[in-house]
Length: 267
Image (cartoon, rainbow, N blue to C red; front, side):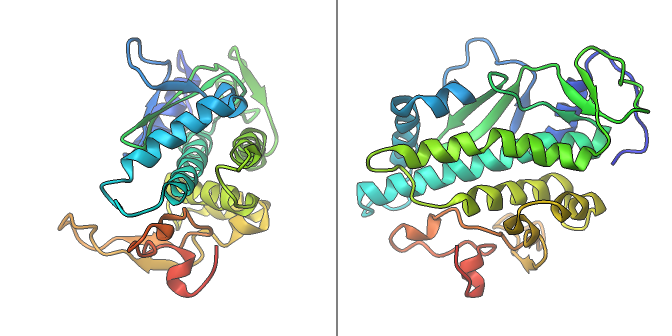
């Protein structure tokens, strides 16, 4: 956690900027950009089976170039798995990234989280709430929207536990379900997001995982050489995932190098 905390005009915006800097794959906004199509309010999307299926179907269409022979139901299942993975990771980045850099945990409250998919993957998130949790000695403790808590690591876990189950339930609720996985996949993806936001060796990560559901606790405990990803920029050491995004189910696709299946495990 950052040792220097200051009072600024927008404590949540400061936390979000810091969180976004830790996840280059995710664009983080303070409001929904005007005129940009494709945005969905998270709670409304989870509550609307037709809209949710539309997002999954559009994402499944984007998988055709990767695996043109995959049956439609397989592509939909993989697309739903990637949606759950991306959404869970993004939520974890917002909550934990802000805490690590500013000592503040933004509120992932219903109605305030907005998501955008592009080319089949979540690429941007907007958080419109001004509420956040902080410690009693934070200069922003008296700011509008502040809530003082004793245990900020527990607050991160509580924010994720309050935000993510609705999505998992919605993906499983269809007839047939869009996704047939248990809650392990949700929490495994959230744990991966914590590692993304903090880095595998960050002491705060161990603190966050210590009181978390069992599946989180395996996140980041094993590091793997992921190569350079084709960038020529040198080898990357990444944490072994605690759960699977289902990419391996596409015909001719192999398990990701960080997947538990790559080590002979299961999802």
